[in-house]
Length: 349
Length: 131
Image (cartoon, rainbow over all chains, first blue to last red; front, side):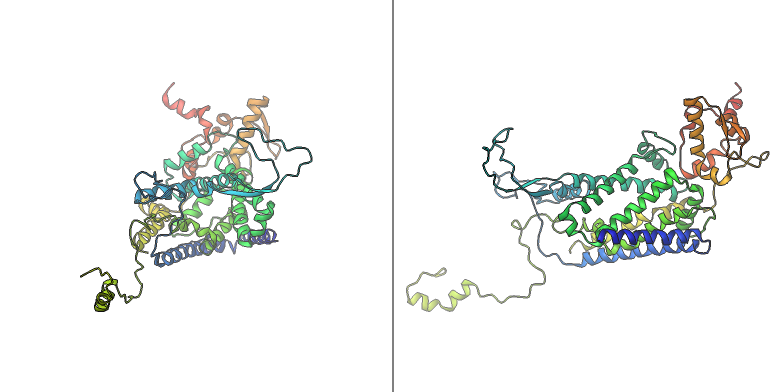
């Protein structure tokens, strides 16, 4: 139901944009006003969220670690998985941000009645008719990691390739990226490897979400909405590049008009481009309010970006109210005469 | 968080990178004026309508290439019934004689590098070199 309703919403958005792109009257709205507004919402929204996180106090070290912490010199410590230095944290964060290290550790529990593997290789054959006990087994789950990694990296490549529409003269580096991405030179316009990876990864993520009963049970409207929105964005982009060609030069005039604040809406741009632009605008405007904010959140996760120095240094909560303490020495002074009279040992004579 | 200043600084850097096209356009003095390719003066119509040629000429060229190289069909019949010789340098460049002022203007503008010229030669460049 969630999947269907989010698909309907995305299709409705696409339909609205198509109408807006087809009518000359609405073209400036969908070509200039909506993208400008969306970019503003994105910038202000992201800034607000990040500043809010920055103002949130994190008085203690709360990293979730998965390695041996530093203690005695003869116990081998894991400086990346349980970092106690800044460089360790930087490496850990880089692995997390660039390679999704924690997702790589993803496991999946499943009830199985398969026989237990005995030592090397062959599982023990259970005797005929012997009931096999159901066991919970945690297996590796790498496909989600692979699809997530493929999606994010290919999305970055596609995003950088789009710089050719925003920079004039187009830098040589963008051309080099496009040449590497289109290395196989299949067809004209050349098929980009990142486009295929992007579609395949998004497709897998959607199929995984909707086919696995457990994951489907957990999935909310917004989970599907982000996927459908991205799929719509990529689908319209792929359609325009390979099938229903728009006038690229006119589109670049429009984008350059946006970045130079001298807006122009060329007459002959196909409505499909307006669908692409509108879905992007919706994505940008939706971004700060959605789970997509993990783009900034991954850097600001206290469970990742803190060194595990809980037992090396004393971390005092800065806003603790002053606590009136009564030390043993003070207590001893108070009752010194009684203690000595009773013949009890005292610390200080 | 005690890293508040570092976080705000990183946010500002992110926004500057994100709005890079705006700074780049400022620095390069970019305008939204198009590339304005030089159209031939002798002919008024191309092999296909101008809207199609603007957007999809590469598809037509690919069809021509497949026809000539793979099927040995050297004549192409346009939808309006006229027949043309399927040839980049013989048909296209006969009217659009100046590659630099026609092809390259838009291709440079859109940042694309078609691989036509890895096999084909621009006839004008041969004449120019005097061979």
